[in-house]
Image 1 (cartoon, helix red, strand yellow):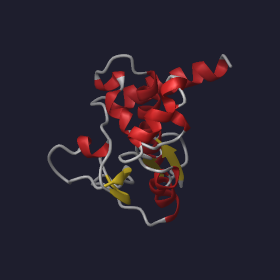
Image 2: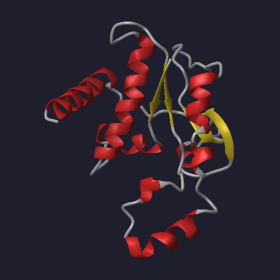
Image 3: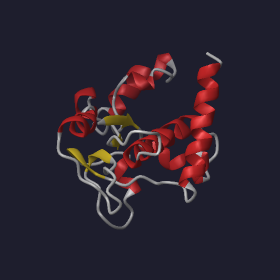
Image 4: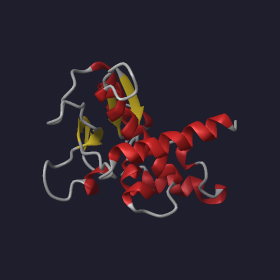
Length: 161
């Protein structure tokens, strides 16, 4: 089993028609990698589980301007997850029995309660913490082509490092 750390930001990738989306595209690549692994598209079939860790009050916000960072942390503390809570969906993906979608692929997991129908994406940003629950991954209509383009971009970036 491979846990692929995605993010709610995958909903905003260029492959899903958003702008200025390098981070979002890297998170979409994780969703697509999990799905490709689970289908056996990359060789051996392995359960790939995409997870959203949630909005965490962590060092990911280190880019916030230093003079306002302490105030920022205080302001987000009531709604953002602790770093321990943000690990819950990843731990569940690694250790608990997997739920699967209609195609037999492991479900995308998020730390918040997400409704089964309606405006589901809104509940992935911040919400009622449940530890780990099924959410939904937004996958481009041409999934295989989008995956190959993102994987090729990753290979190119790695070759240049």
